[in-house]
Image 1 (cartoon, helix red, strand yellow):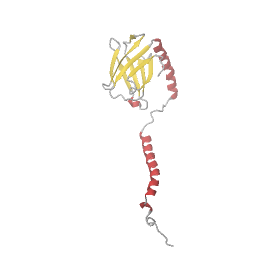
Image 2 (cartoon, helix red, strand yellow):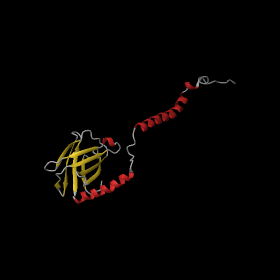
Image 3 (cartoon, one colour):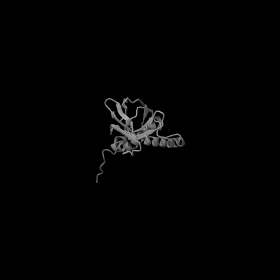
Image 4 (cartoon, helix red, strand yellow):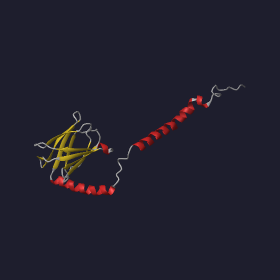
Length: 174
């Protein structure tokens, strides 16, 4: 009987493809871990709030301002035009335009440095037009409040899904 020898029996391990194929999985995991660690160290945790108690007290004050908005029957009706970067609309109370200045806050969901505070000065008919260049098509938290912060309207809004923004006092979000 004659013994047959395989031609690969005398070659070193690194010349075979299977050891490299088997090592590919752990190498990919090590690379992904390194990328995750770098991202975790370079990116701040903006979602975590430092003072929960202070925020809880602020929520109660906001609820009082919501009730004032309800008693005034406030409604903000606006539309964002992505091509021109303009937010236009009007704020009205009992169907009549509000002519007093007010503020619109757009809070980014994860990056506070991208939050926007817009000062609004309506015209004689209650209409306003604001330039908002580079508004990201993400999910924003919108807060509209009077100049003296006596009332507040709030709602979430995704301009990428719906260019229209309508906030009515005591309206349930869709």
